[in-house]
Length: 251
Image 1 (cartoon, rainbow, N blue to C red):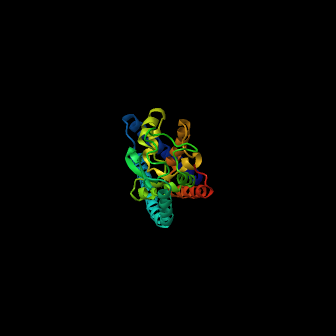
Image 2: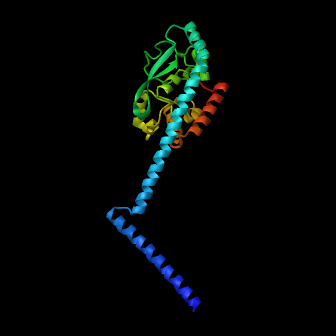
Image 3: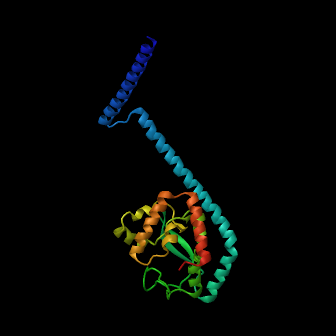
């Protein structure tokens, strides 16, 4: 009798469990027909959204803090080098030491990007915006060296401090080229979701642009970075960039 009673209890429990599961299924089905989610699923969705928002906000905060910290240290440490570069530029050619160029930043907002001048004064006065090419005749001798070592980018640390750029991110492009690329490259605007960078995954993998196909290939790396952006990835890319500077693999 005891065995039969225990078996009946287990059977009753299983029936109760099945009835509960059936009721939950019917609730979900009815809610789906009405375009509503059950309370437990609504809470789960809300929790997921909150957790995702907090995670993204935290990564943005850490990334920005890292940018400001490293940019400040970089500027102080590189001041003697920047002074020597400025003297060399003035000694070789007439014109300003720095070169300001309008670039498109995060969310399509334009800003003035700062670089050491590497070309002759008014190099694009007759041609308009064009890409730099290897052995570019417009480039000065000191400019060629700065391009090769990426030292012409040092003044952009000021752009980082101002919040216009990040140390790592998609390379900012000129408004003319952005306007043209939007016409022919699908999802090009997605790279504008984050601050542009002094260096980035696309720059390390692909180098400078020479053709439209180069831009398309680099966009894949830019979008990959936008999806995976995090401080640890930034530190890794900074290390790879330092390696490129030391080995003088730029152009």
